[in-house]
Length: 451
Image 1 (cartoon, rainbow, N blue to C red):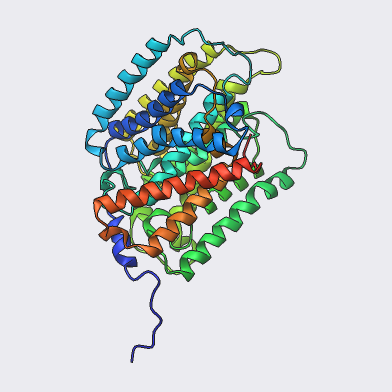
Image 2 (cartoon, rainbow, N blue to C red):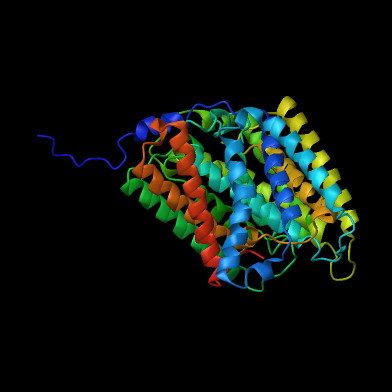
């Protein structure tokens, strides 16, 4: 007598509960996880004996080089995030010792030294790719029990590895944005339309697919109908409407963040963290809509930081990489101090609201990751890995492919009931498929990036 259609996702509510009400981990542990991935990237660079142009001469040599990239970079990252999670600090120390040992053996400290405005391009690209690797691995791994719950997104306050995701994307776009490079657009609305339309289309496509497939959605992240792409589109629209020079954008961003934080501490945080929702659009999507103020402020701060580090007066004065290293180390320390003070005396870090402490924490973590790559330039040189280039040239495409594969896995497998061994095999197959797809896209000549 049951005439209702069978749901494509019968364990939807169980899966939503699996990623809800989580406390997160410590800032130190999150930092250690990021350092592990960065060290793996640096180690792979020390073993890289050929340039990416040499490896790309044929598909066979390209795939062989990518296979090494996968074994030395992606696979260990996957294991550290899952089965080796309890040994994250030991792994970090071990990788650091290996890096010191191999660089000492190879005696590569006298590699050619590059100066000028393009000197940091390789470092920024590596930072972007590391961020994307982490994101792509985590969005599926979090659905398995083998992935520690401490690394999943927090419910209200706290920090975790996945809490960095959307903030890092916003900051990553700011670092490589036209605003940071002081590239003026004569017709602002055309530039806004070009950058925003794809994001809005992706946002509505994701909304339609989750509704039609009855896909699990954690409402506490963005709201009922809001999603990651709408946040990026909102930041792009706000930045285009109120376009300020890069050297002053951080001031505007700071004013927005301080004003938003004052609003939060005066009662808005209670409203945003409550489970009560009305029937209007704003109430149903309160987390996504109000957090736009935080992400907008973060983007503006990121623009000025990037301009200050890499693009300031680049047409008249070429800053040495040594000076850039000093600047980024000082900024990293400054933002870490701000994070600790604000988290303790103003309001704890909350990704859900994108409060001031969350913004400074995301900036500090990302600058730390970028600083590690810049500091290692004299050790590993300026070589680019094949897998690194494939992702960097099509960063948005890699995220979309990862989302599609994640959806297919979730609709095909009851991830929360999978055994640890099966979970690892599925995650290895998923990550390998993602890498192969991105390599084939890159080898075919398709290129879409923000540079």
